[in-house]
Amino acid sequence: MQHLPNDTIDILLDQFGQIETVIGDPNFPTTTDAWGGNDTVTATITQPEAEVTIFGDDNTTLHGQSHGGNDSSRSTSTTAGTPPSWSAMPRR
Image 1: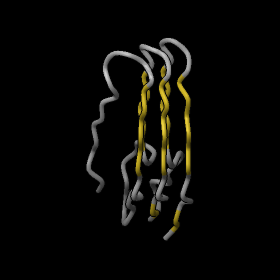
Image 2: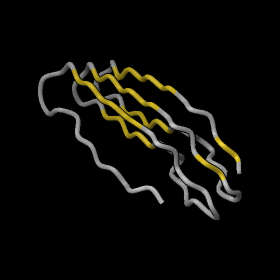
Image 3: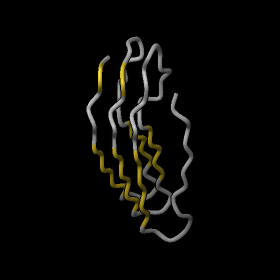
Image 4: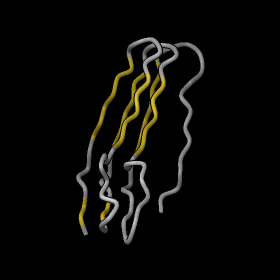
């Protein structure tokens, strides 16, 4: 079984209206048995109307014995207004 590396990704959203998508394990191999890395993603938002979407593993369908990693994500905002919100999808 292939094991993907543990990644640490820090992203700064410092432009008004900036939109970013961050993927912890991009190009996750979907046709073989693989285990995603234990990725850590931190997003810091310093401007209003900025938006970030975080995927721990590439947003694909996992096949065979593939599993996503034990990922963690954190978002901080230094702007006034609505605080960051989260939604999570269960791992397979």
